[in-house]
Image (cartoon, rainbow, N blue to C red):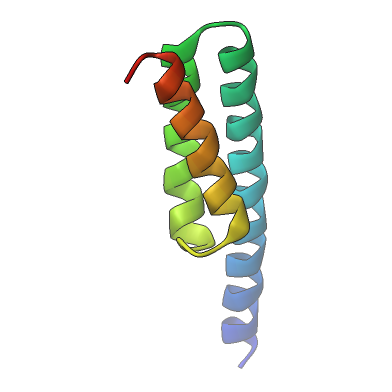
Length: 79
């Protein structure tokens, strides 16, 4: 039906929006890491990780990249 099609289109657009937002969070996390602001870096990478886990799943390559970035930030914190 028309309503089902519109709901699917909305969910696809919502997923694309979330992925773009996650990319921004990841980039901010990497920027803060480069600036030596590791606590902020971890916060942004964690937010990105949560969104990507929910939208792409744990087996997506971009999710793995985010975990790697999060790991570097924790390492820089000495954790």
